[in-house]
Image (cartoon, rainbow, N blue to C red; front, top):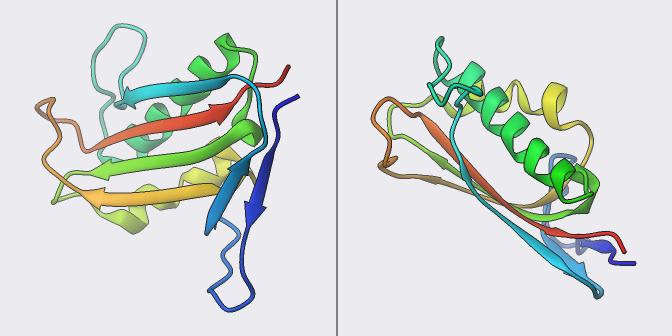
Length: 129
């Protein structure tokens, strides 16, 4: 069974939302491509960064579920935010959608390829055996 071990050295800042590093012991790996805040119809959800972030996370969770995994199997998340997006407003919805499952996280402000998209999220997960 693949496992994700969280690496949080005592000399670095501890945060319940992310890990400083993760080790994937062995097994199959799932790479989840960038997910925008789009519904089943392919249209961006309305209302700004919070609803788009929540939907993008639900889309990541759907891909994980289809592969037989959950957020506890994610070793790494990459979150790309449009320059105008409010980081704290987007972050506010993470706990309710993602739950208490830290991963190694990178957050960057970039130009998002899809017009109107404020966030794009990708993941790397260690699939359970």
